[in-house]
Length: 258
Image 1 (cartoon, rainbow, N blue to C red):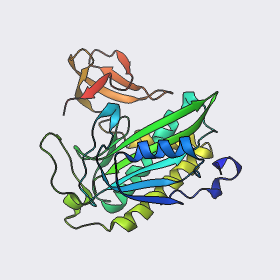
Image 2: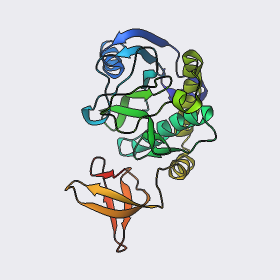
Image 3: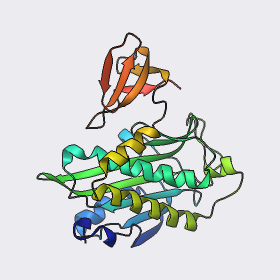
Image 4: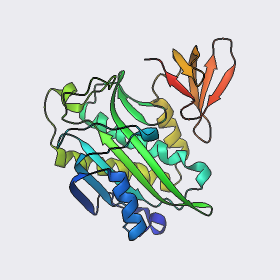
């Protein structure tokens, strides 16, 4: 049942489909949607992904049984397609809330648009795939990868970290899933209730390097110094250059030089 009738009806993670191994939980979730009518809030998790997906076809690395790898099926039919970045904000904040729960004294931030960083290291990634029907989002798959108990990472990954590396102790994965579902539910309910200003304020408050002069690279590989001012209505990044000009960047049009 979709959330439209009562925001208290949703409990993300019920049902929770657990897989030992799968190519991609997002692909599995999309297949479920195409073949059946899964309940909103259904979560598919896997102990291992052989073909885990990151943004723009990138690979998400994870050792067996070490991390949270899951996809959540949502049906945000209340959200117009032009406002889909609001869902990105809600999900990003939920993952930030989750990470901050375990490491409350660390600097946890959202690296635009939706990577989760601890200081300058990446701890989580999000891949949101929306399916549009008419003037609404008929279904959405939120893929989430969170580094929990993995310590060693491949050398080609530039700046990974995990909860275990930071805390110096392993995290109970089962309890972590329940905590994740709780935070996702809270933030998704905010979105449903139309608390967009609150979500955006929180998103900007926790945005990585906001209001700091930093080095960026554009699509032409030109490096420049700029300062993030915020995001516009569709989620594009607003950056002020040293000469005072403001530029707006869509996803993949700008990257941090870290």
